[in-house]
Length: 69
Image (cartoon, rainbow, N blue to C red; front, side):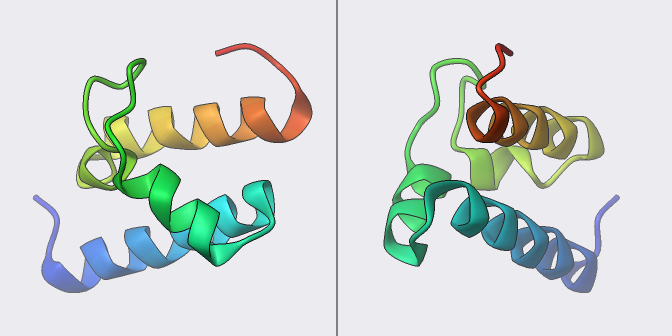
């Protein structure tokens, strides 16, 4: 189970990674809060679980490095 402080740390980490990936806080926020076809939910929602967080990180890494998910 994720506590509120753990969840905030996950969100902060994910926001930082998304900003680095997209180059803009605005674009990162839109991406994090928009339904993602591959995930079947918003990335920010998926980050609430360990497995979901790993999936979101994989997608951001793929976007960053031009790979596939």
